[in-house]
Amino acid sequence: MHLFSALRALLLILPLSWMSPGAWAQDTLTHIAKTGELRLGHREASHPFSYKDPATGQVRGYSVDICTKIYEELKKELKRPDLRLTYVLVDGKNRLADLKNNVVDLECGTTTNTLERQKEVAFSHHIFIATTAFLVRKDSGIKTVDDLNGKRIAVERKTTNDGLLATNERTYHRKFIYVPVDSTAQGLDALTRREADAVFADDAGLWSPMTRLGKAMGDYQFLEKRLSVEPYSIGLRRQDPRFKELVDQVTRRLIQTGEMAALYKKWFHTDQGTLPMSVFMRDALKRPSDVGVEQIAF
Image 1: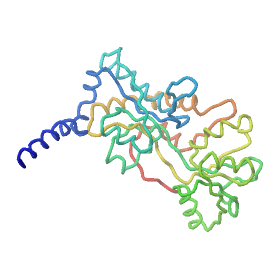
Image 2 (image 1 turned 90 degrees about the horizontal axis):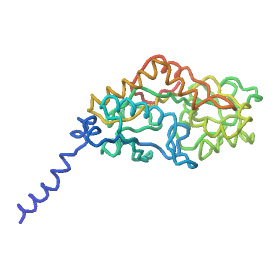
Image 3 (image 1 turned 90 degrees about the vertical axis):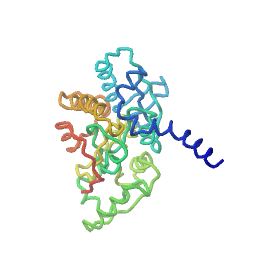
Image 4 (image 1 turned 180 degrees about the vertical axis):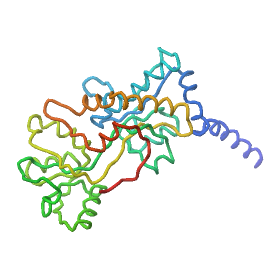
C-alpha cells in the first residue's frame, strides 16, 4: 500500500516537474510560435507606465508601449504576422511569480531591477530611472536641500523614502519636521494646502497626481538634488538567452535611435508641464544597461 501511494505521488509530481519554470523557459520563442500568443503582464493603475484605461478598457502606458515594440519584433522574428497579444493583469505581489510560473512572458510595469530580483527573473535594459526627489512650491524660496532644514516634509509613512530622509538628517546634521501621509497623492495634497513645505517621493510616482492640478502644475518644481535612484526594466524569465537577446535588441535599438526619448516625451510632457528628466535618466538614454542595483542613496 505504501509502495502504491509513493508511485501515485510520483506520477502526480512528474508533469509538474516537466513544466518547471527552469525547463520551460529554455524555449520561450518556440512556445510563443506554437501558441501564436505573447502574454504581456500589465498593472491596473500604474500611471503613466502601465494601466487599464477605464473609459476605453485599453491597456496603455510608457512601459506598455515598449513591450508593444517587442511584440512587433517578435512577429518579424517568428514570421507570424498573426501573432496575438494577450494582456494579463498582474499586481505588485504576484508579478515576479507570474513570470517564473509561465503565466506571462513579459512583465511591463514599474519593476525596479535589483541584484536580488535578478536571482528570480531576468531583466531588459533599463527603460526608466526613477529618483526620489523633493517637490516644492516655486514661490517658497526653497532652492536646495539645505533650505529644507527645519521645514515640514510630507513623506509616506513606513517606506524606504521615510528611511532616506532619516539617513540624510544624520549624515548632514539636518532636522526635518515630518508630515506623515498614506500615499504620494496625499503628500501632494498637503503641499498644495500649504500644510507641508515639500513632499518627498519618487518623481515618477508624483507625476500622475501632479497632472491633475491642471495649469496650477506650473506652480511647483523639483529640487535638483535626488537622494536615490531606482532603474525600471521589463521583466522576463531567467535562463532564456534567445528571448532575452531579442528583448535586449529591441530596447537597445529604442535607446540608440532616440525612440525611447520620444516615448518619454509622449508620456511625461503635457500641456500643463513636463516631468524634468533627471541626469540619471539622461544617462540611461545614452547607453543601454541592464545591471541591477540595490537602492543607492546620495
